[in-house]
Image (cartoon, rainbow over all chains, first blue to last red; front, top):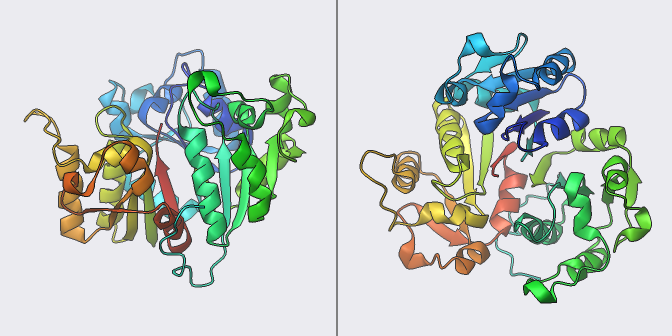
Length: 100
Length: 131
Length: 119
């Protein structure tokens, strides 16, 4: 199963809601305003670091770059992907749950 | 019941649909329109599941009186779901308790299920919609 | 693989429509099939042919029309959501059609994956 999150973790609890209900080893894609959950040096960082131990966590590169960040700013263990990878992930990991 | 187009085009396929309600009612339109989706997927004879998590649990709390805001209360529609054979309704225990609610506070019979069971339910679905 | 796409937000206010477009493009680029793109809630406003963004901005409505033309996409606007918002046939941009919510459920049944973009 692929879980997508598109809300900033500082504004809404979509990311935490997703983490609470995603099964171990599922895949989580952070995009739109949720890319801020992938950035190092925030108060959310420890949550994201823990998430990488249970899930495969990805962040959408174009959304990251648009907001002034790149690969170097991303929490270790989080993979930067593009739209093509997003499609491949939907194919590979099955039904998508959008946490809005 | 709304008019349905394309009902014939299911090829006998029955999928597990989950409507995952996580938003509070009335403040935004999402909860109301999810109900429309639920009713239509019943017309398509799909295996319909409805789950309430986070603020979504407020959607089926008893006693909505929407006269003062001139919006349609959707509790009557929820009460009618049984008539469409939609009986797989789940409320997440943790979300319910966080909000000071109990199973008796809901307008329809629900299965109260813990977060772990909810994660299994979600993982077993073919299509997950809602908001 | 066959994809259904659901767009729940209007253009310009929220990134959902942009994300859905970029995703749909990538699906097609990867050689997959798009069974249908369904526009629900304020998403119906993506079909408004009167939309006229400044020339240095992306034209969201036109972009969907052009993608539909190039790939023979089925862009369906939910009738109930459309009527509420005054979105009628005469306002529809090229490539869009208005139909019932059943078309979304049918897309969920017929597609291998249904991917939702919203707020």
